[in-house]
Length: 260
Length: 107
Image 1: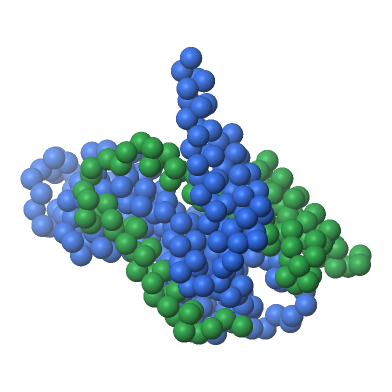
Image 2 (image 1 turned 30 degrees about the horizontal axis):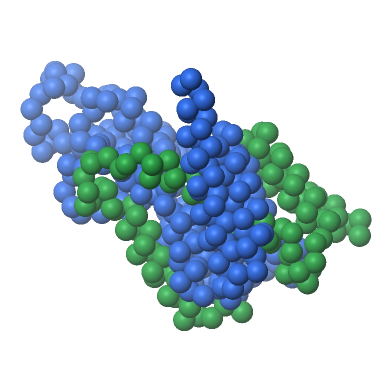
């Protein structure tokens, strides 16, 4: 889709700091939307295969197409969806499933905190819409854009966010659906049970950015194995808590070491 | 098989919970800052939860009767190594899948 130059919407006869009329707000929204849409397009390469993978994994676990699609539309958070499916397939109590999946999603609260200075003044329904579409990719793209163009108006920032969500979130639903259909067609016995751990391992590798991240991961994994005897998959919670504490402590020590 | 009541309970409550996490600051708290020690722990939730989730699945896969399977273990370790060095999710995924397929073909 050809993208017109986003700057062309600032009519040449007027200064960019003219008082904001509703008309200007709409123009700025559109300019932001176009810029966001363009910035979001590369994420299609990440979102589509990952959504399909979820569709396949969920159908392998016994979900029907409607249930699989509902998961992606209602929850709209990849890693948490994979976590929930894994634990549900393992007959884990609902409360532990929810705690684990929400723990994976705690980072969303950080994104919410980080984006509030930019989009906090929006009316409630727009803030709710932003919250629903706040995922790893939309957050990262918006945070970068707001840093790069600090003087843009609120309308332009909201436009950017809605624009960047379009090539990310609707394809997430669509490709979940395609994956669910594909999953029904794949024969059993190909070792597909291991696609899910592999998907998580693939997410984990690139996330081990610092020594503290590696310490957290090691403690998390080791803790889960040591406490594997606990009922209801509580070993997972024990491992995760140990991992978080270990990571935070490692960061604190390395910061102290650097300060000395 | 997954129990369908449990499944829909998880879908709906996880949807509400995830929305709540996304909305909490944007909608309710405004731009007050969180204490540093909480942020420090939050930074490590994902990298702590994921290994805790997969370590037992890798070491004791249910599809292999809970016994350690060299093929799955090799696939996991190589995928992790490739992901950590290349920082590329798809390179890691392809490595793991290649080991699984090669193992299938050899055994």
